[in-house]
Image (cartoon, rainbow, N blue to C red):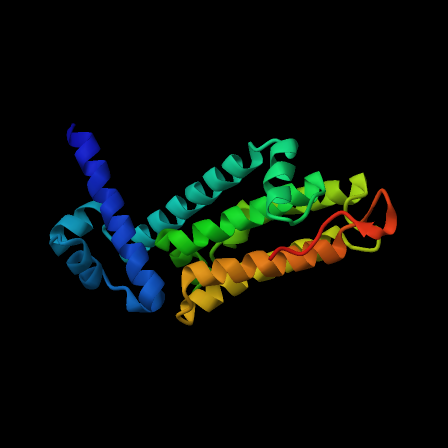
Length: 219
């Protein structure tokens, strides 16, 4: 019971730190402001996290855990299920491309909803020595795109590595929009539409030839 209470306290402190970092960046988040935000004394905060650096490390570790869980959850969806989900939205209908799309959108939703993840992204910008947060999800997107290329779902003249970089740019753009004050729901909607246009333009023609693409733009 004591250990569980201590863990809840630590987690509350990490979330408070993440929210402060999300709002004001690394330099704008002080131990004093974090202690006020979480409603605990400075002594209680420093008992669990003696330095700001230790607290930042905890934010980044939790972010990596969240991202990996999101990747695993998205990856658990079978190719057929992904195709059904995408087809119902009138979007990409090629299995591997559909799975790549769902992976990117899963990360986008996590970024929009979790200040811990947004804080980790901001820390990566402000402190380049930190591990790039995309390392926890972008390689899997790349693998799916390589598979799409091998399966003939992705146009043969489309380089999977370049398309992977475009996906990373779209997600980073989502973060930039939210930093500028955009509504998260609207920003996610725009990400979905842009991603659909991108993947549709890169999707190989369907069985009917060049005039029968495997996808159609979403509404």
